[in-house]
Image 1 (spheres, protein in one colour):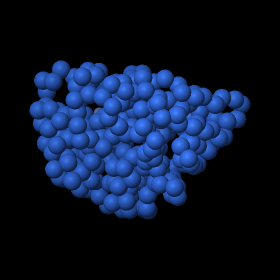
Image 2 (cartoon, rainbow, N blue to C red):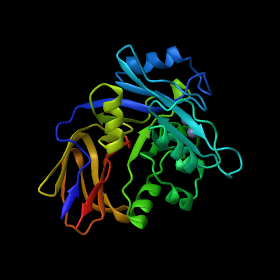
Image 3 (cartoon, rainbow, N blue to C red):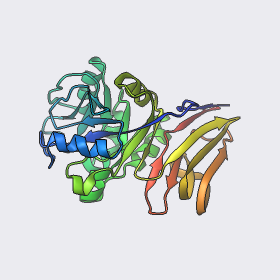
Image 4 (cartoon, rainbow, N blue to C red):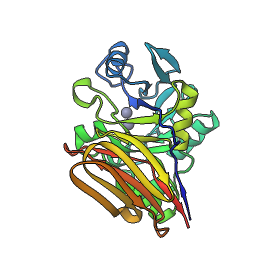
Length: 288
Ligand SMILES: [Zn+2]
Ligand SMILES: [Zn+2]
């Protein structure tokens, strides 16, 4: 048996958000204000993803700004389908399908992120057919705050269980209004503080996502997955069909471990904080 671990052993966590709006599209704050609030909150990297508007890669006050855009499918698909592009792709025009946008982003050597499938009411079969993207949004803070459709973890477990394909999930705040949805979701990526390294960590799944709880260490030793976290209410090891293979709960859980049996298709870990907020690891793929 082999446990495919997306995490490097030496954790050098950088904090970042991959989905943010400014007044360049439908955000409430100017770019300069947006950059200041993320910088002041200790973010290492940020993607300014205004709708249909490309922002190039650059450095700003010690933060790495990734090349980014929120891309749209043309009208007529029956639901709002959005794809974030990361990297130096240049502006991506509206296209007829999500797959066409993903293919164009890859053609331009960028990374594609499938945005908020729950908010989009994306049909499961449409989600299942998408290929070639780097990750999808398992949690979108703005969609949670605005309409209660922020969690898309059912898409994740359903897809990986039925299709047997590993997918990476990430959390974003999709900030539109700083007082409402700023810092409601973000990732910690295992990278050096420069664009190529951060994009490399995102591509290989070497990051975890959170709406609050902190994970200090993630490691695999002799087929045992072990996490050290900030004080939590519960740590869940989740496998195919969203079944909880193992749970560690208590007043102050700070460490949890699970020994893989070889029967699981995958294990992903959720850390549940005392305030109800969640952190998500990427899946550990199990090869019998
Ligand atoms: Zn969107
Ligand atoms: Zn957005």
